Image 1 (tube, rainbow, N blue to C red):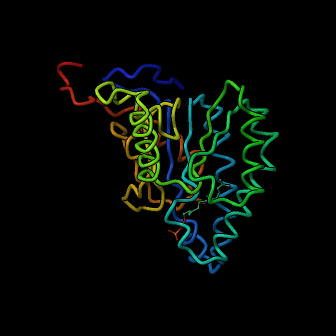
Image 2 (cartoon, rainbow, N blue to C red; image 1 turned 120 degrees about the horizontal axis):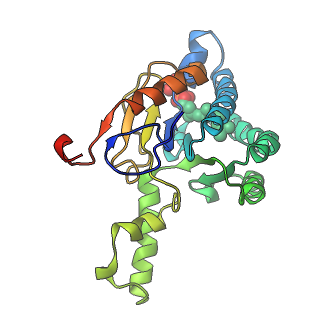
Length: 247
Ligand code: FPP
């Protein structure tokens, strides 16, 4: 499979940077008469497979939406189940992620997470920091508006202190202050479970992304289906605001 190594417009090839909104765990479970927690557990198992596939295909980055700033409004029990699953994932997957030479980073409001989870997350990031393979970004307590707000505050502070001339602020300045700094913008954003919403995910970064909305709930999103979606992307034409003739 060929990767698109350039950001040039035209026939696109395989995407280098992919983001996924892993939606539909709850519905997947309810349809089977199971508790929602069973859906989240199936979701973790699916994530493990999709990460492996992304790494095998040579994707540069995979960003997954695991928990949003809005998800804190869910019942306490469900939030606790998810935190427990994140903790277990981080602890159990460390060796395999390291073996596949993946570099893991977490994006989101860390200060809202339990202290022990933050520590384990930091350990995983440190252990894999120098790995040259897939960059796996896990968005936990993530919201794009919160991220932009954070960036704007930091830029405003630098400006107020006289370290940054407002006239010198560029799109690049903003990108550098986002939690995703240094990782390529998504070429493709996938959302599972048939919902067609962006849900406050990578709003700045996905300005030129293609979207794929697939019907399967996240636990049913197999590696084969993932490959199909990537191949479908490869057949699309991206113009980045230009016209076909200019491509
Ligand atoms: C959306 O389904 C999914 C979530 C809010 C959680 C996503 C989390 C995982 C896949 C768990 C694994 C993540 C890591 C990093 C270990 P939903 O509950 O909103 O489903 P519904 O829309 O059918 O109710």
